Length: 106
Image (cartoon, rainbow, N blue to C red):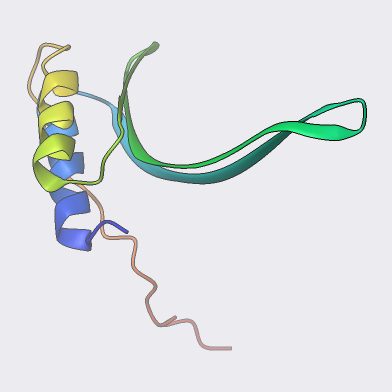
């Protein structure tokens, strides 16, 4: 849903002011509702929600932002605003957690 390059850019933006940890999570939800009265359908509704949550930690404090879009500019803007909530500078870098071939030999 979000390209790796953009994910890294968002995480680096979140970490740039000294956060200890940051994360991104995407939520997609489809819902249907029926309202019954006397065993008859009185109302029905359905919907679709898509968005992205950004969270960072500094010590014991947690900061959170939510964007109801996956557009690059909106995600990066939310990351900048969230990161600016804290002061400091960071030497943290985003780790590559891609699966690698094991070098273990039995």
